[in-house]
Image (cartoon, rainbow, N blue to C red; front, side, top):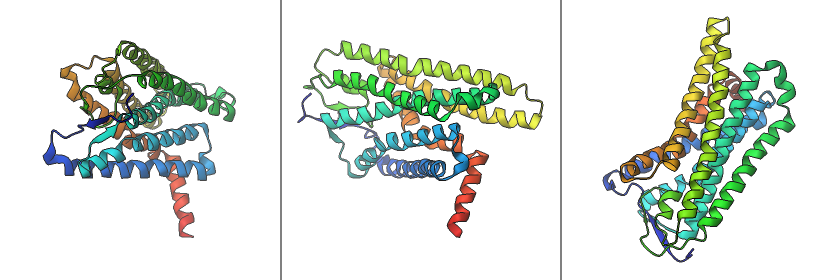
Length: 305
């Protein structure tokens, strides 16, 4: 890996007349995403009523999304504002390493969260004994450690590649697939490892999540109260839609061949899981919840005193 070589992130440079519009759009999204996720983290830490397994995982999810959004959007905003799209090879690899580690951890954490809801709704008598504090920490730590091992192996292979040809990346961040296309080394091993790890990181978690929600929805449909059934079904269906979009875009980008026909859609799909998902998740998972609204009301009352 040549430390002196520079890449050029083309981003949305093919639409020069929209650069300022993109800047303000992504700036608003970034500010709202950070504010919403930081609010959730603060509420979960400060309010005793939210010291439960579900909100422990939701707090972890918000921390992840604060971090991985911040690995991409500040640099994108700077390039849109200044027009400077260059990035060194080492900075590019570091950006992808941080992003991939956080994104992979989120894939596992979403599966853990669906398992938590499965136990709470389908096995309520076993929930308190199964989902204790120690087990919650083990599940969260397992998500981080598994991701760290996989992504470190992948990045160690990528760091050995040589880049001596074209230097333009048709993307708005250092995603791995367009980067390795610029290498003049043999990339067959790296490409194979990407496919294997992408399969491990997306397909099993997605299938486990779908299975959990299938059991949850089956249990919800047996609730006698029509109002309770509708409310629970609305909540779970919105969770399932967001999770499905998240996993399907990842599977499309990282597991399907990156042909010319898919290159432009892939950039749009990347916006979905890197920019819009961290914006939507706090609204879908947390800020609609009665307990979070109550915690926010209590926090505001304390601020007035």
